[in-house]
Amino acid sequence: MAGSPNVVFVLGPPGSGKGTQCANIVKTFDFVHLSAGDLLRAERSTPGSEYGDLIEGHIRNGTIVPVEITCSLIEKAMKESGKNRFLIDGFPRNRDNLDGWQKQMGDKVKEVYVLLLSCTEEVATERCLKRGQAGSGRSDDNLESLKKRFQTYQKDTMPIIKYYEAKDMVRSIDANCNDKDAIFSEICKLFDEWKS
Ligand code: C5P
Ligand code: MG
Image (cartoon, rainbow, N blue to C red; front, side, top):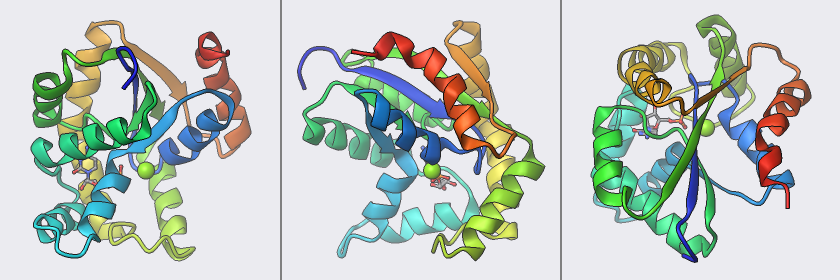
């Protein structure tokens, strides 16, 4: 990795549009998008992975995989990209994620801020159920898993957001409306400083 990599964490409840908006950001700004959930799903589906069953259990249950696994996948992907600006989506999701990250990566990266996409549980649930019906193939886009994912978000992820808020590092965007372009316009205002 060239220089000290810059990291923007992207958080928000399931269905808040993290993946969609990260895809938009990389088209306009020079960032690499790494989704913790996508990295875990890929690891789960890798034949012979010793963590496959453990990861799938957490995904279905809406709980959080131990940080040693997730952080190593993120660090490996960062190194493989050869780039030095990252959107890390869906991480850190709980105290264990945060502590493990700081231990493993704290000295190696510069944390810029947390982009928070906020929306109500009602809006987010509807989006995830639609995504499931449209064939997302995700084993957790069903009402039972979604309820657990929201519980985890409230109980485990909100304290992490509060932690970054206390450091004045949260940039919050209202992601309730279904106009993805309008939401992206708001994000662009934040990311203007990254225009080359
Ligand atoms: O972010 P996404 O909705 O894709 O995450 C799906 C699932 O992956 C989470 O509900 C959780 O079980 C797992 N995950 C995790 N640790 C993370 C991110 C995701 O365990 N930091
Ligand atoms: Mg996602």
